[in-house]
Image 1 (cartoon, rainbow, N blue to C red):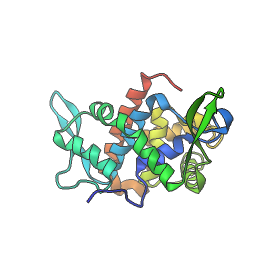
Image 2: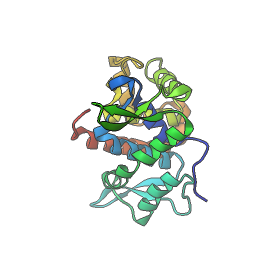
Image 3: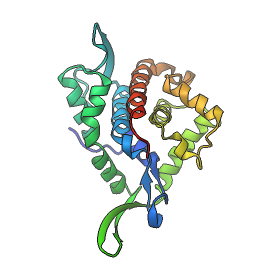
Image 4: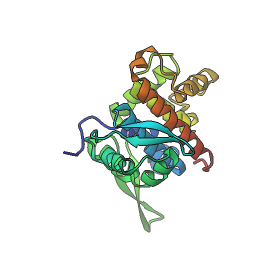
Length: 233
């Protein structure tokens, strides 16, 4: 049975991290990397499926590296299940999957963050005429804990869990890491560590996650390629 698990998905956590409190007009929040967001969220969903051993990578002659669903292992999360169902139709390249599933992820993931109370949605009137929906709030304790976990890995050299390693790798691969400079210093050491995570160098604690690490590294590198050709916000 599909649904909304109590544990937030990796894509939810990534979207919450990308939420930048008080960065818009009238104290509203914005989401970093909006122009590339659908690639980033789709990458997080695929990485989550990889970490959960719901998908794996395979190499085909002339087709290169493809992602295929592992038969009989659909995820319980309904958003992830929609991505898995698409992959289950046939093995596909990561770029194809990102472009196909990414555009429909932002709103349901944002709705989850609002439902959990991490972010609030309200209406502001612009020029006294137009009503505009805005995002508000600080992201709460959950965003603080996620930022602290990523900062510990990138700044303090802490050993990452596979989940935190994937989050840090996706933020770095998407090109949004410089926008976190107030919370995560943008230094050469941080850049170097982030690039290591992008390549799947997660450390000894993640050694048992070799397959998932490889899948995630492939996904992140495709996110980098996709994000590189898009304008930054």
